[in-house]
Image (cartoon, rainbow, N blue to C red):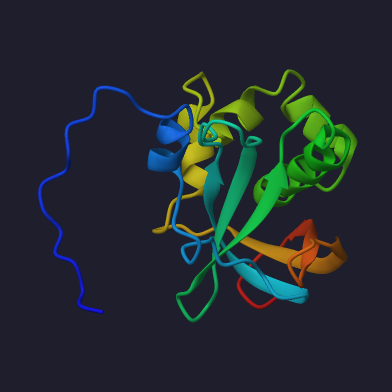
Length: 171
């Protein structure tokens, strides 16, 4: 069968209810590369919380760079059912990034979640400080521990993540 040529997009006056979600969705092959199970020391790049496409749950996408230059992400679902697991994990990431040795010290540093909000892209009084932890010129190293969780229904597993701060790469 001969390949069809792409022409100009057709002008449409009526779209299906899923059209906007379709436009915003990624192709099936363009998923974020996640960590394999194990312990990985890497450079912290940042946290994104993009608006979800219609019909999908919101996610926090935590980005890291491996020493070979490849990027990996840890994903944390932010729907109401997942918050009890995701928020403590995100708090442990923030603790690792700033080097807080205990929850009490982190809570004293960020009692209202202002730093966390800045880390996820909200502009506030701690935005500059949060950006400094994601500065490639002065990298912040984090140990990401990835553990395979329950099956995801697609032949793989959901990943569970924990984080530890490290002083220098490889520690």
